[in-house]
Length: 157
Image 1: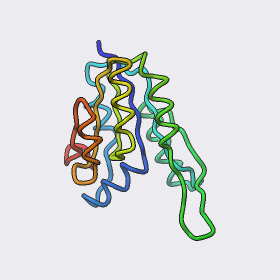
Image 2: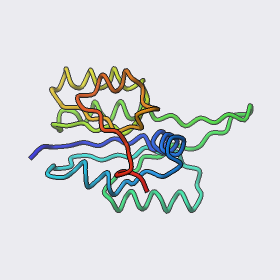
Image 3: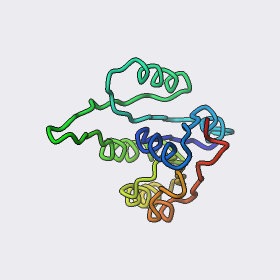
């Protein structure tokens, strides 16, 4: 049985599905599809913590599905912009987990992860799968993945 590790850039998936489809991502449908016939060795969802009850409810849904939630505080800058980037945290966890997995699944459209996927594929011999919204996923990320799975109606609420 293939061993799979899943890494979800929650903010990226939220905003890209909202922008392209005006709908939410269906994490349960994703889990069923991505883990069918596979053993899950790790599953992390990376999010920003604003501390509101709706968000906490969503995080509990993710936990119930099987994800470990990793949170960073929401930081509002004095100029009105916000910060809440998990790129380094995701990268470190992927590298730490790659030796235990046959397949690394990344849910993000962020092209900054293309080097990461190249690295773990070459260093650990893993297959890499990227789930993303086609119109908003970096071409370099799609190219670096062993397999790109387009987020479409089957994975939306």
